[in-house]
Image 1: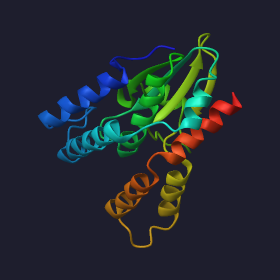
Image 2 (image 1 turned 45 degrees about the vertical axis):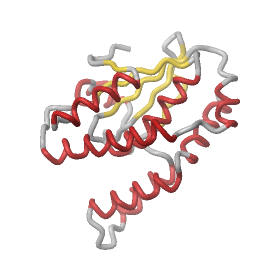
Image 3 (image 1 turned 180 degrees about the vertical axis):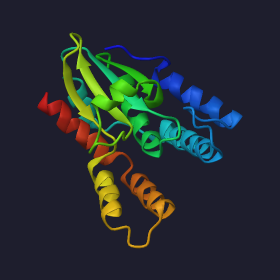
Length: 194
């Protein structure tokens, strides 16, 4: 698979986000203040998760059973709130396992790849695609844990007077309360099914 540059490790992506936040910028061609503000907020979210997140014992045990090398590709952007909540978990799994190699790419730089991995015909991110060493696709995950996706679907079907900002608050409150438990459980199930 050909990936358009830049291609980041998790650490490189986080450092780049720090630079973007300090300079009031974001990823992509659409350099608006709103997206720059989201990037700064997401950098803070990721910083908090980098300090507090730990993988649960069952997930570590299942990750330890990975027998063949995997290459994970995550499609994202710096302004994406779901990415800020999910990428630290993905990065922590890749850091924990010698069998997982993580590459992070930008949606706007990789439109053909994104078109192959739509969610309900939408370019929703983050999107993780896992491959084995021969390039065979093993699984995909994303753009968010199941309950968070249900929140979005419910809001789209019946906003009940809630605007996007109100929904975003609800969504990120869910992430804060969940503390990555659901996402870690989803990865446990994925690894058990391989």
